[in-house]
Length: 612
Ligand code: M6R
Image (tube, rainbow, N blue to C red; front, side, top):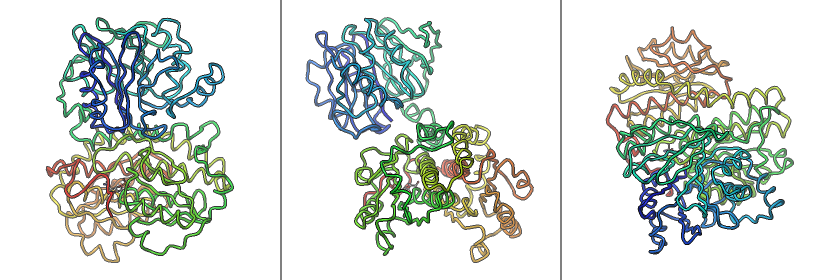
C-alpha cells in the first residue's frame, strides 16, 4: 500500500523524509516523491522507481528546507510512471497533496473541475483531483479549505496537504486509511504507518475517521468535520522497528490474514449496488453483446490462484450458466485445448508476473480469445497484456503464502459470475440481491471469524496437529477446492505433508492411510451435501482419525460427530469459501509457528515465480 511521511520542524527535512520513506519500503511500492518549500514555492521531485533513486535526484538545495511531504506509491489508478507518482499539485502549484486510499467520485470531480475551472489534469490518478479541488475552494485558510473540499469527496483517504503560503503548516485528513501524528520537541511528523516515525519519536496520536489535523513545529491540533476541536490521547509506542512493520503482529502472514475484512471491502467498493441489487462491472470494457455470446470460459492460474479459479468455475457455471474449464497454467500451455474466439479466458495472478500464467494468457490471445485478468498489481505484465483487468484491492502481499490476495480473487470471481448472470439473464433479481447482500456482509463476518476467541480455538487445535507429519483435508462441492487450498497452505509453511481429498473419494484409496489420531480437517459448509460429507466423516471416525470440522453455525449437529469444531456464521452456500478458508489459513499459520518454521519466507519458495 502507499506510504506517507510529513515533517515540519527545524531540521533539514530531506533526510528525515527520505529516511521515513525507506522505513515504509517493506510495504511495497513502485514510485516515490517529495515536495519542499523553496522561495515561496513548492518544489516537487518524484519518479517511478525506488526511494534510493529518488534520493539521487535531490540536489543540495532540496536538502535545506524545514518542512515537506513524501510518498511511496503502489499504483491503483494509472500505471507506475513519473507523472502518476505523488505528490500531486494544483494548477498554480500552490497546493500539494500526498494521498493514500481511493477517491470513488474522482471521475465526477474531474469533470466538474475541468468544466468549471478549466483544469487540465496531468496524471491518471484519482488523487490529483484533491489538489485541484482544494485550490478551487482555497480561501486563505488551508485547514478550513481542506475541510470544505473533503466534504465533497467520497472514498477512503489519508491525506497530507502543504500550501506554498504557509511553509511550516501541514494539514491532514483521514477517512478509512491510517494516519498517525508523531509528536516531537519543536518539530512534528505525520505518517501512514508507525515505522516511519520510530527513529524520531515514540509519542503518537492516531487520527480517527472524519478528523482533520493542523500540524506546525510547535502545535498539533485536531478537529472534527464541523471544525470543533478534538481532544486526543497521546500513545507511547513500545514496539521495536520490526514489530512496527508488521503492525504489531509476529509475522506478515498473520497481519495479512487479519487485513482480509478490509481487503474484501475495498475489492467490493463501487462494484456492488445494494439499492439496485446488482453488480456493476462496467469498468470492464467488454460489450454486453460480446459477453452474452461467450460460449465457454477458460480459467488459467497457478497455486492458490488456481484454487480460486476452481471456485470461480462453480460460481460462474451456477450463476451465469456458462461452461468453465480451469487449468493449472503450466498444464494449459502444453495441452491442446479447443480454443476459439467465442470463448473468454480469465487469468488469475496475485503478482501478475507468474511466467506460466503469462504464457497461458499469450496462448489464449494468440487463438483469438479475449482475456480478462484478475490481478492485485497495477502495471504488472498480466495487467498490461490482458484485454481487460479486474483489480483486487488487497494491497501488497508480503508473506509468500497467499491469503488476502486469494480471498479477494474469490470476490472478483463472484462479481464476474453475477455480472455475467445479469447480462445473460440467468440470474433472477431476487438471487442477484441475495448475492449482493451476501457479498456486502462478508467483511463483518470475516471479522467474526478472525476474533480472538476463534484464533485461540485454532491455536489449541494446532497443538495436536503439530506432532504429525501427515494430514488430510476433505470436503465436497465448493468445500473441495477450499480443502485443496488448506492443504497447500499447511504444506507450504509448516512442511507437514497434507493431502486434499474429495470426501467421496476417500473410500477409493486414501482411506488406507487413516490411522488412530491422524489429523483430518473436514470442511462441511455446503447444505446440499452436508449429510454426505458427514457420512464420510463417520467413516474416518470409525478408523480412529481425529476430525476437526469447519462448518456453519446453523449446522449445529456437526459438533456431536467430530473431535473439535469451528463454526462459521450462517451464509449462503455459494459464498462460504470466503469464510471457510480463514480457519485453514490460521491452522497453517499457528502450526508453522509452533514448529518454528520461517512463516513469511518458507524454504524453497518465492513470492513471485517468474521462471517456468
Ligand atoms: O502471483 P500468482 O498469484 O500468480 O502466484 C501463483 C502461485 O505461485 C501462488 O499462489 C502460490 O501458490 C502461493 N505461494 C500460495 O500461497
